[in-house]
Image 1: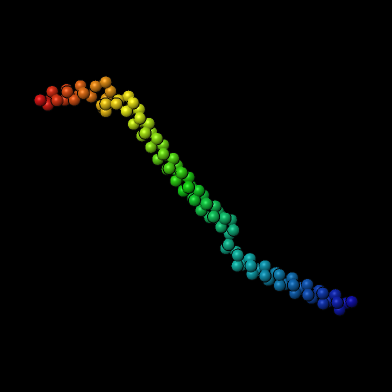
Image 2: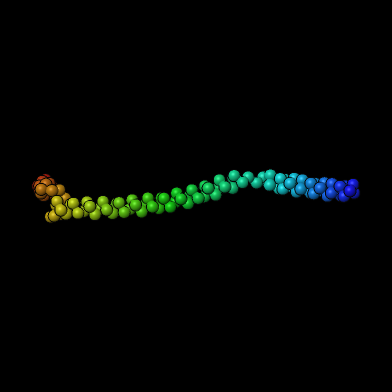
Length: 104
């Protein structure tokens, strides 16, 4: 019985020494490895990708809004000024006549 206990104790000591050595070696190997830095870099990359997608959506939305505004302005201009005058109610014609009279 005493012999079995000594063998068991020796095996446990060898295993404990092996695990300790492995832990020390891994700690030394991974000492400069910061897992939070890795995840923060990935997070920043994903944020940059999301920002690019949002910028693209905003740009497309602004272009669409600009087109809609241009169409609405043209529609209103032709509705209220069908003759194509620059200013309504023949004001531009009067200005043109004044300029012609000044030149001549």
